[in-house]
Amino acid sequence: MQIGYKLASEGYGPRDLIRQAIRAEEAGFDFVEMSDHYHPWLDNQGHSPFTWTVFGAIAERTERIRLVTGVTCPTIRYHPAIVAQAAATLALVSDGRFDLGVGSGERLNEHVVGREFPPIDIRQRMLREALEIIRLLWRGGYRTYRGEYLSISDARVFDLPERLPDIIVAAGGPDAARLAAELGDGLFATDPEARLVDTYRGAGGSGGGYAEVGMAWAADEQTAAQAALETSRWALTGWKVMSELPNPVNFDAATSTVRRDDILEQFACGSDPKRYLEVAQQYVDAGFDHLVMQNAGPDPDGFIDFYRSELDTPMRELSPAK
Image (cartoon, rainbow, N blue to C red; front, side):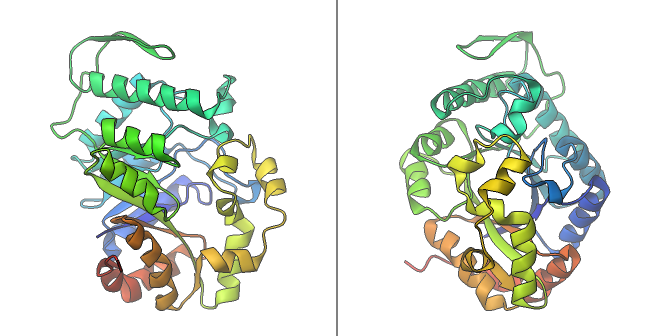
């Protein structure tokens, strides 16, 4: 079992994220994962720094912990040729500690460049082409690719690492899970759905299964749940909503009916380790073996201390109940 710490780039500025990553390494986490956004989900989160710059700084300030984007959309806001170059460079400056999480994107972040945000079937075809381009460029040499949606012409990534990053493909349904098996090195998801892992494995996928586990640490349960309600209630909307709304104000409106009880039902809140293990067990039972601790509580340092003292060993000892 690999355990990761989610760097909430929507909730903290770049220097604080770097500091948290250093503390996560000291606490024993195996990797840090950070979303690659242009906007936060809600305005009151207040941040959204450039992920690649922050990761570059983290790479220089840490020695062991791995870095994972969770996730980058390599089709609209970025061209896959740029992602291929950026990922290769980050792998080099981190001494091989970087892995590339990719997905079909959210309107929230991709519409900002003024391009159409297409329906999901087209986004999936674009993602396939993007992965083919990245893989092609990572083979070295000058490369040309003519796709239906994406192309490259005489492009070459000159600085390639000896160990190429794993590509972890986000999936909200079976088609994406099969794509992860075909062109990726792992599966990324946000819900404890065994069918995604089963589809991925059935299609030949043999890499790690990454999943974000919702939690909110505070000394008492109600304080933790209130903090999660104020900044992370968007997580309860589901992927179909999360991928389509264009701006934080829309997420604010779409989540106006979410209540603390809804948060308590899905998140591990407070300071009881048993509740954290109970929520994480759902993901382990579904087949995930890379669990990302996604803390929505008000005190990241308190959570890291709590993880180190109460969760590190028992979390790693979790195994499927079935």
